[in-house]
Amino acid sequence: MARKGKQANISSVFERIRYETPAPHVARVTLARAEQRNAQDRKMLYELDRAFRIAVADDDVKVIIIAADGPHFSSGHDLNDRADLNEFDTVSLWGGFDEEGQAGMMNGEEEIYLGFCWRWRNLPKPTIAQVQGKVIAGGLMLVWPFDIVVASDDATFSDPVVAFGVNGHEFFTHAWELGARKAKEMLFTGAAFTAEECHRMGMVNMVVPRAQLESATLELAQRIARRPMVGLRLAKMAVNQSLDAQGQWTAIQAAFSLHHVGHANARAKYGYPVEPSGAELIRNEAKGRKA
Ligand code: ZN
Image (cartoon, rainbow, N blue to C red; front, side, top):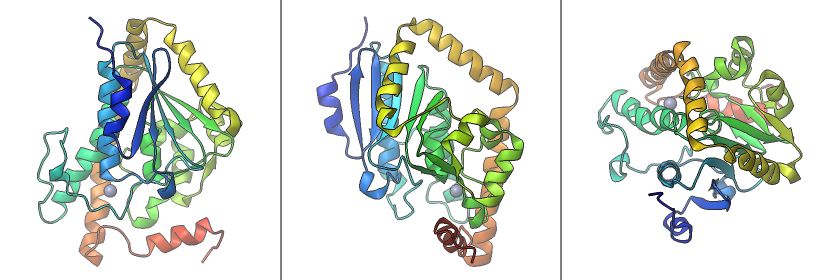
């Protein structure tokens, strides 16, 4: 028997997100931390994972949208978040979050960054990211794991964290999303690519005016939802398996290891897991300065 989500009761359990079913067979999970430009703290990530589990378990839901309140989709990880991972209902079998040296941090990023992104990439239902405004670094980790990207014409995408002495954010699918040359340009320069550029590169499926972002995404979701769940699931698996056959998972894991070489190098040099000058460089370039 189909399990039906009890929508009225669901949203009340969340503080960082909302869970809604805006149309038949469509669930929408919305980042609801606009004042902080939807910076992702650990609580938000665990709430997202819980929401996706609810949507997957509800046989009435066929398509899942991830959206965001406010002018910007997500500014990335909340670097002020100090929440203890041991307090959460963790989803991987990693543990060791308090280990000394680089190990504790690597274990934590395996759980909440690489681990979550890979789980969400493999959600057994079609997913759509509905994106506006700025998407920075970890913000891409709430876009790239999802199947289809609908962006408003004001959306921009960047991963400037090479300035921190690491290779890029923790879910390293850059070369698949942008092609190798543009991936290198994004990483080497820290520049923000527009929605239109990303559409040309195939990273974004469609670009719409800001005012139509929600309705266009919902319309697309409803079109998808007219198809049988089994066909949708098999189609998604077949495409993902094509990426797997290209070695995507192996490449992502290798890049994650290099990411922690970067963190460990900064930790050895500065006693801090990123290059201390990185934040200023990123801030200055965002303001249009070359200093
Ligand atoms: Zn990291």
